[in-house]
Length: 144
Image (cartoon, rainbow, N blue to C red):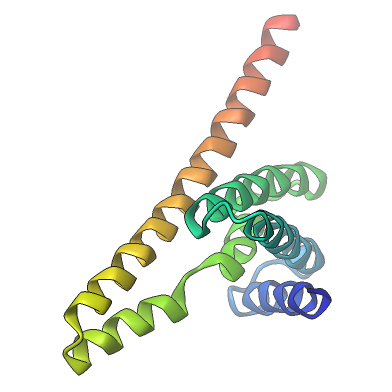
């Protein structure tokens, strides 16, 4: 598990380099990806399913990104795009297309549905984290 966390950190950090994010935010972007992957692994251990684990990890990535965005005074996307990289189902999408190419359509469709479910879980998780932020900001503005 430690090796997976290290690779998720460096994978997110490397994507931040490729995406040309500011240098001062690279470590935070890597940390965001590592936190998301840790939460994903934790929910996978208790066997709640890949899509649900991805959803919870994506929410955590969104919230972590918001914290780093406020700390570094940078846009949230600087942190959440590299942060979601460990969750992106690229290998699964490849397997789906590969099965279509080999003529195993039933397996290809199954893997494509899993890929779409994970992609939707990532998107919904980021939307939910945005809703949390909106709700928190709304409460703070009504107090003032």
